[in-house]
Amino acid sequence: MRYWLMKTEPDEFSIDDLAKKKVEPWTGVRNYQARNFMRDGMQVGDGVLFYHSSCEVPGVAGIAEVSSAAYPDPSQFDRKSDYYDAASKREEPRWYLVEVKFKRKLKRTIALTELKERAAELEGFPLLARGNRLSVLPVTKAQWDFILKLE
Image 1: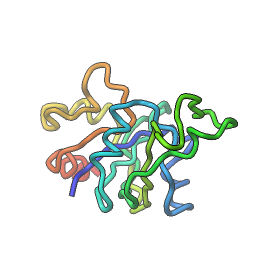
Image 2 (image 1 turned 120 degrees about the vertical axis):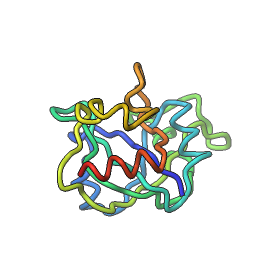
Image 3 (image 1 turned 90 degrees about the vertical axis):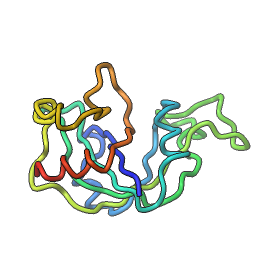
């Protein structure tokens, strides 16, 4: 089992939205490294730290799990989608997604500021790396366990 952090803007799709829907395809990723994590690294059952970004209090808001193998993101072929990619062909899709399943909302959001304060204990946590803007990041078991203990 592997662990991941997936970022979303809560005004677009929040942990509460995932709780209502139960399962959601993680569409719209348009970064090759993040795509590769989903396509090549994620497996059904992997843990996901559901992270709210670009909001008043960015931080880990809930837990989800990967619930499907990677498959082509249909939004890349939809001309009406914000994520349409004219260069992507159905026979050679460029972008992939996985589906994520709601597990639980945390008792409190574990804020980015708190994670930064605990950086020494989260050694190598990719979210805290300078200039890191990826929406999908790998997390070690030790980092996963530490973050959940902060709840």
